[in-house]
Length: 409
Image (cartoon, rainbow, N blue to C red; front, side):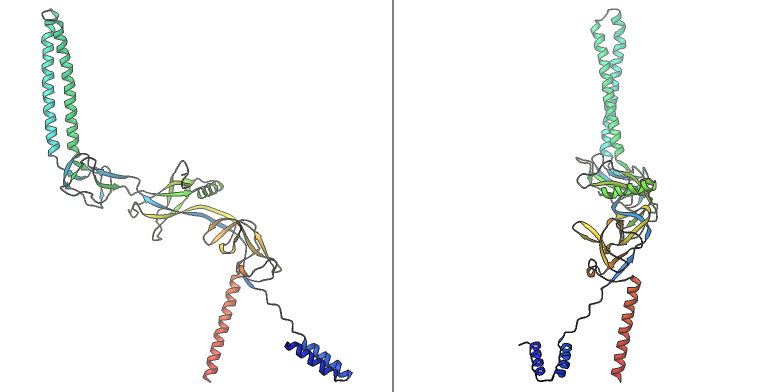
């Protein structure tokens, strides 16, 4: 038998042995003692809320990319020869036409001398043919010799002229090869490490890479922009009446430092890459101190302007369920309501609300798991939450002090 049933039966046996007035009194007491006390309802949960307000939202975007030189030139050997001298210091600035390498000139000089000899022979032969024509022409006019002899002499002159042209071409080619032995800087810029050593044979079979040069001021920043980012930028610049090339941008380096010079867009590719869904974009930055080098990674922050009257709330206040986004709104009676919203761009830790909220409404930003549809809550602002926490810490500290004082007594 349960305890409550036993107690009830005992009360009934006691009542049967009492007079009527006593029975009434005992029955009243039994009603009080046997009835369970009703439990008090729990207090509404405490949630942190934010009052929505319109603000001027800075519309910017960040894009990751890589730096590159506007002009990277590979200095290569144009003929087969041995390296005699290296005339530059690696990693330094060189001017246009500065000497870089000196290749062995002897084979080229020999080829030039041979070509000049062949040219002299061709010119001598042509001179003989022309004299033959001059001697035979009067005789042919007097019919002292057959006309065929004069025709053969004229043909020999034409052949001699062609031989001179061929010999001259060989001379020009030999002079060009000799000039290739003196390797000079094709432009002004920063030269990298040498790729060959003194005494090494270069140019055998293919042009050998000797060194690479790059211009550094200005320097280019290449990045791949998604279709969404491109359309967002286009919409914002059309709203403000600007051009994409006019948008100010900042270059943030890999260590978080900001490059002092502002940049600008100078190129947007004609088509989207179907494999990646991105557009290739190039920006330009001044680099007078030569701090930026090709191959460096960084990101650009593009300022798209300001959108007035925007509603921004913390991203953590937005929940997503089955492809839809919603927030919890607290009305004037402190009741929670789930409301669908349309979100826009993410700006730092906040998200832009395009539709669904109005200024003055209160949105739950902390304690979303405690909220139920139509349920009462205790809304607190961030400042009120901080004050409550501070008060609790003060009480805890005071209680500890009191415990320490009583134990010392």
